[in-house]
Length: 170
Image 1 (cartoon, rainbow, N blue to C red):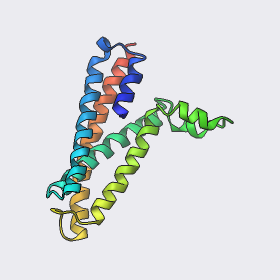
Image 2: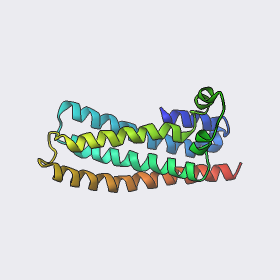
Image 3: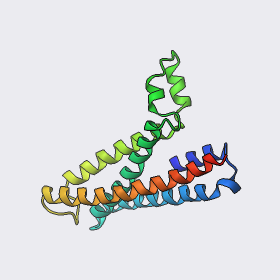
């Protein structure tokens, strides 16, 4: 859903013929993350042996992707980041916040928190096919999540570099 919101927001500024590659990249990355997230949840519900590993992989990808986006956008002031929200001081802060909910950090921070909570749960409770001991689950899960978060980081940087290139040519 966030990918769709980003595309709609982008089409308010860019034409599809001009920003088609960036939109296509956003659709691909969002679809892959969405599909893998759905499959990992389905695997957990059905008790599949691959559920633990797939959940750690997609969790790492999502954490790396979302964290990188939030970090870059907030620290560089892109996309009306969180410092603006925290320093608003308006009497109509609720309406103001809702009207600015389109910005990416506000969409991706809950996603990031959801995945952190989900991954902590997956590491604490043994899933079918996961290592028996908690220590082994944590070591294997964190190892997978770390390397996949690096992949997610580079996917987000690739997407942002494409968007930055389009923005600089406007």
